[in-house]
Image 1: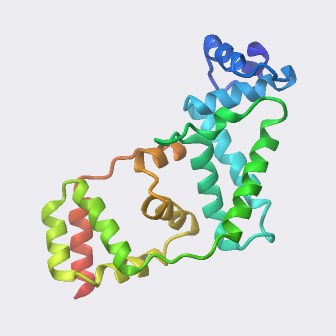
Image 2 (image 1 turned 120 degrees about the vertical axis):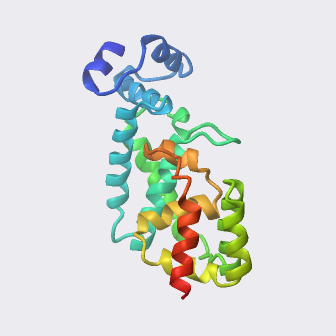
Length: 220
C-alpha cells in the first residue's frame, strides 16, 4: 500500500513507519483506500504537497455549493473546513485523524463541507459590535508588545477605531473577511491559521506603528 500510494502521490512524502502507525490505528481500513490514507496521514503531518492538495479539493467542493448557499458564506465555509480538518487546537486534534480509510477521502471531505455549509447557513447572523472589534484588535496589539502605539490609539481615537476597522473590512475579499472572523471572532490563533494556509505567521514588527500612522492620517 505504501509503494502504491507513493506512486499515486509522488509530490507527497510519508515515511513507511509513519504510514504503518496510521494503518495500525485503523484496523478496519479498506486496502483499496491505502493511497487516500497515505494522503490523509501526510495532511496530518503538515506535508506541503498534501496541504496544497487539501486546499484545492476543499475549494472545489465549496464552489460546488454555489447557488445552494448564500454567496457570502462560501469563503467562510472554506476557511472553517480547512481549520477543522487540518489544524490541531488545544482541545482537539485535527479532524483528518478521524478518516478511517473505509471510503474515498474526497467523499469524506465533501461530507464535512456539506455539514459545515448547513451549520453556517442555519446559524443566526451575528454582528460584532464596533466596541468589541476595537477592544479585540487593540488587545491583540498589546500582546504583541506594541504598548506605545496602543496607548496612542486608545487616548486619541477611542470609539472611532472600531467603526474605521469595519469600513476597512468591507473593502476586503470574502476570503480575507473569513480569516479575520476565524481569528478575532472564533479565536483561532495566527499560528493555526498559518499552518492551514501554509504561510508565515509572523508580521513585520513595524505593523502596529504603520496601522497607527495610517489611521491618524485617515482621521485627519
